[in-house]
Image (cartoon, rainbow, N blue to C red; front, side, top):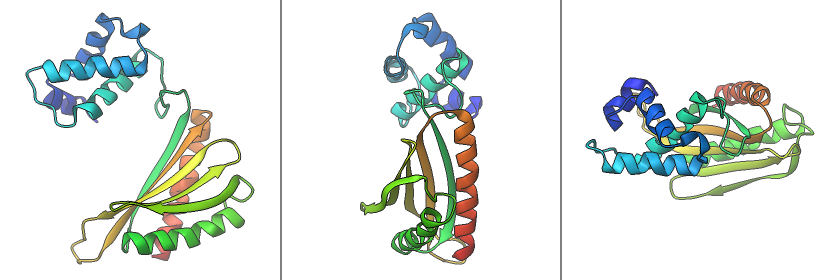
Length: 191
């Protein structure tokens, strides 16, 4: 998000948050402690922040990047993640079924051939559908499917969001991001 958004929502710029956390020993604090410090300031401040937990996490991540502790895409455990998303026509259930069939080809002979460990699995909740697979390198993939508002044409739409976690490096995350963007583009063309 842009600095103006943080200033509007939290009442302070990102530079202010870096100074605030730094002045309170932020370099020595762990991620969770940074979040708690930012969250406390947001709750005590004069600006009412919707979703303060999310903004506190985001402020902590920005601080960690500013001091060189974390790279873009790096999680607090030191690992990296690759993400990609695409909106397609269809209900969540139809999209999950179609993705599972499409992904079977990825696992058997496509970009995931020989790279997975165990069988892909699906699950669901009231608002989400999931397709997950563990990778032989210790990373894991979750494709999260949710309903999107209907388009102008009234067609039912779903969003597929790939989250490939526990990657060892930024280079690996960048490479996998490209793989997932291509896979989602190819999948969307089948819909």
